Length: 424
Image 1 (tube, one colour):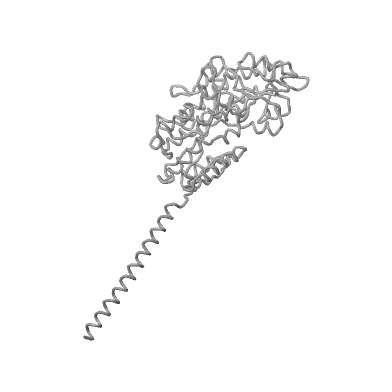
Image 2 (cartoon, rainbow, N blue to C red):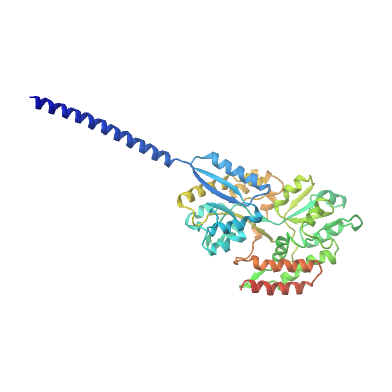
């Protein structure tokens, strides 16, 4: 009987312990499940590099902040790398010598070179036609290599015409009507030139931004700097473009001689040069100076067609970025596509159709709609690896010819030889 009572007692204790133990396991399982749920909903950081160290930086930050506030799954960590060091840092990252960002901005003229290195994700595998149809076709084509899309365009930034409205009015010209072709440009420039007042219709730069001006005139002449796998610097269209620029200085005398780096900008700001060819990034400088200026598409200074040289900013994703973060990056890019008006406020023209076709975009400022007018006929650098090795001698040729240190033909022949050797 004692044994029976003891057995009953032991069985009851065992049951209590078992129930207690089962309850503890259940709580532990629930706690583990809760922790897993918390981990699943934890915000993931996306590192994003961009070279926007000028007035456009705060505008991109505004977009990024808007995205971060719009959802809780991802946090885009926007990091500005100065333009002067940008691709040095990009190369260090791709070579494993610096932490790799999860996404970055890349200029359109760099996409071919980096895509050939196999370090960028092919976005064709991630995006459908419905997505790419939301961007201007010229911008998409600029980010495409051999049918594969490696960048999602933020904008197209072509050369623009600026003019001083006060000088136009003083010269008897309509301050709201800029020149639209070569003949008008020369006529206006002559009327705006007053040597006694050290005032010129246009200041021909011998350095930057010739990287935009010269290929614009070449394209307007119906020419190309690279054709059939060969550098094409001595073709008639290229020679004529440089002869025209030189004639503005020596024949028409509407430009001062020997304009050095940024000299044309200084003259424009001082009211000593009435017209200026430069990029959309200049708007804030004119605004800060309180200038009464106009902005319009570049006149057809060439002989054949409307064309304008430009570049673009594109979002690219390194090949090493994880699939999980890539999903978040694509979500962010969708937000930028639909909420890019802040970028237009910087004077740029977003390549996103929902932005540049909107009524709000037409009223955002006086520049951005003018930029977008040139989207259809914008041209980019040829898709040649390390194209910069070819343009360096070309820009050197432009410089020495405009300074009168060599004839147009001699300068371009030398550039042709150097560029061809550099690309072999």
